[in-house]
Image 1 (cartoon, helix red, strand yellow):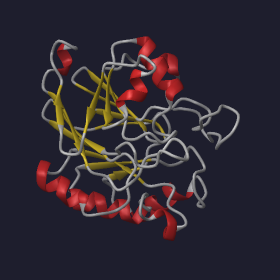
Image 2: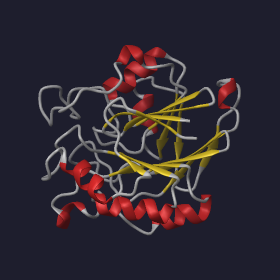
Image 3: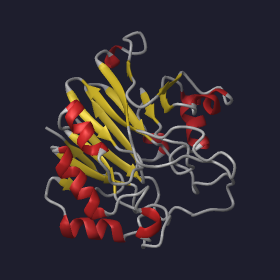
Image 4: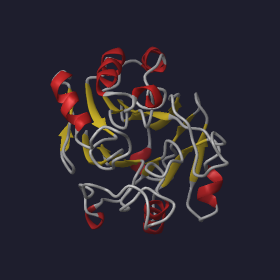
Length: 260
């Protein structure tokens, strides 16, 4: 299994011929308009033209840095991808003729049919809880769901946390599924803590989540790309490297980890 960090929360998961992309964003800004909002500090680690054919796209919630419509449109135009979204997000994709798209509530699962692609036989996506919120405007807060995903792919378990604060859900996920082979855990946009702790983990909390999950390998996401909070863009990775075990990796943009 190969895990490649594109950057931010965009990760390419490749295993046994399956290509999965998480919360993809190739745009310059995570914003409703192209001329305002935080500008990316680093280019995506995979050039768009070098992206392999994508089988599955996992979207955890509707914030602009996780559901980037220009990128989603390009993936849909390329064809061949199935989109998995939280409850309530489906109509946004349908309005742009993006699909097929499947909505999942917490606790629901989707087993992919072999008719989509032979390589997807045996792949099941589970929607799992996260501590976060949703909104794309001023009047739609929490009108759609947010989530993480547990991916069962050819007898391997990959946990994609999306955006989340620290909470009891990590132990609940471990108790339900067992320890994942790989956990993709967010570490950035955590300052100030009085405001951000309910929705974003700090690096030390991500280490605790790694330990609670009993993950074979964890990989840091949601850092180093956009300036979204008070800490500097490189501080999350620096703090994690100072405190994390060797099994918690900080990958550079475009860097891959091969999981035995």
